[in-house]
Image (cartoon, rainbow, N blue to C red; front, side, top):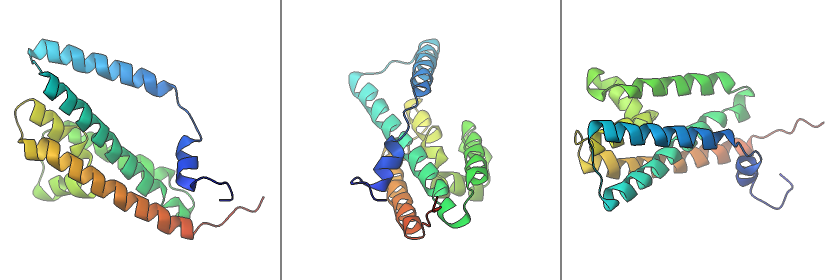
Length: 164
């Protein structure tokens, strides 16, 4: 809190995790392989749009993690809540249409994991509209990151140093 940089920037930049590069490489290889196997073709514009959607989907994951982790300001131990929240993301590996409306709403707007993979993926496969696959992904990510930042700021006001 006494350093001359914003506490959130300090927290986010504190640790560099090189294992993330492995995940990016494997994920890229899997997407490339699936694209070839399915016979999909992308224009340069669609490729750039795909990268844009990946950025905003990543922003959604960041927002969810920030908001849930910020609960630690009040309850001091948020790991179990983070784990539970991230387990909910596995529901979005399946088509949203198989779930009741309440669960679809939760996975789309309360914990918007559906916009990290399902809706954008369905758009690129021709199963969803541009509005649902791209535009709403961008809008939901921006709303999510703003709300998460507000939760972080409220939590920061509650911060109590350990006093070591």
